[in-house]
Length: 172
Image 1 (spheres, rainbow, N blue to C red):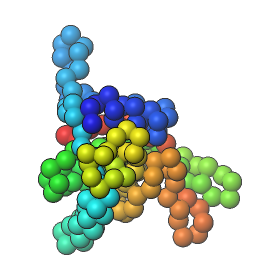
Image 2: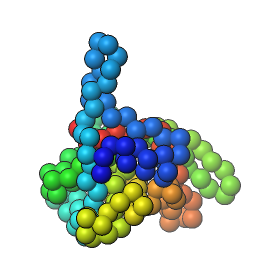
Image 3: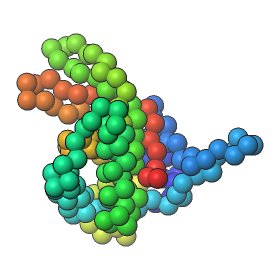
Image 4: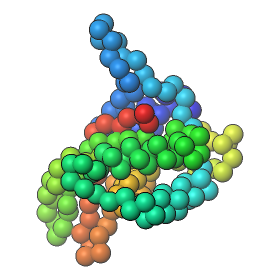
């Protein structure tokens, strides 16, 4: 999928979010991009990734640690591991505001980093297109994921966390 397809999916699934494909900015102000082609995850790849990622976190005792190892580190790890294991750049990094919603009130918790996954609904990637690719939000500290058109992770008490994506960045 060309980078323009990724931009279209982000506009469709994450209204208001920007795709920032900029590895470096030249003196002229021109941006040098990361990748120009992206390869979505298939259902079986994503399922295997979630299993392996959970195992990796457990076996290596990867835990949140204040500003030393926090949300952006987990997002980078998930993106890098998917690329290493499947040789695809389907797991993008995202930044946005996160809200706690309970009993009709909405409280800003702050800024947060997480992942956006290019997810093809078909196992056969030759049948994958813009029309059957969705974006999945992955909370890499969980790990738990939801379809981006419903950006809420429900908690056990019935409250939920709402993700408002502002920027999406390629792996790298």
